[in-house]
Length: 203
Ligand SMILES: C[S@@+](CC[C@H](N)C(=O)[O-])C[C@H]1O[C@@H](n2cnc3c(N)ncnc32)[C@H](O)[C@@H]1O
Image (cartoon, rainbow, N blue to C red):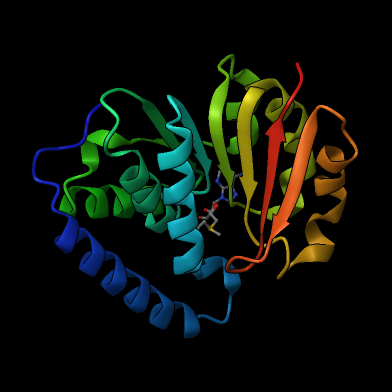
């Protein structure tokens, strides 16, 4: 898929700034955390864009679209590539629809396939290998994704997980599945809420 013709960088940057501000204000008023958009921090979004630009992945999977803030930045990082497949998953249809609107508003709608599905079901039936996977969904279910993630990653594939410093206790058992696995080299980055990066080195 290629980037829609109407993409304009200055508009994209101000749109993302506005989206982050509007959704953060909304989130701050929500008592139930599940009602919040919970976007990645802007510096994490930029880091994702950088990884997408450096790695030039042909197959990208995002687990946890929400209303598309990180999706927009991944699409931004991919925009110079002529051909790639970027899938972004969310279990919540209304959030996915909102993300579709934001992608349209920034001229990036052609760059992403938005899928409404439970990540566990997707990973269980998936046969593809991804060059880049960004995981930012409900942490309590991450351990259920281990098998599907290992299967979806091959040599050179990068897995990035958000909130690993802000919610360390909730993800440490999951992260250990990668740090204790000699097929991966892993790093925890002090970017935003803390990003974990595992790179697959062996089959
Ligand atoms: C932290 S938010 C994602 C934020 C997004 N990455 C961003 O930066 O804008 C988590 C999202 O994961 C979705 N989610 C929760 N459980 C899921 C599941 N089992 N499968 C797919 N998506 C799920 C939620 O609906 C929510 O929109």
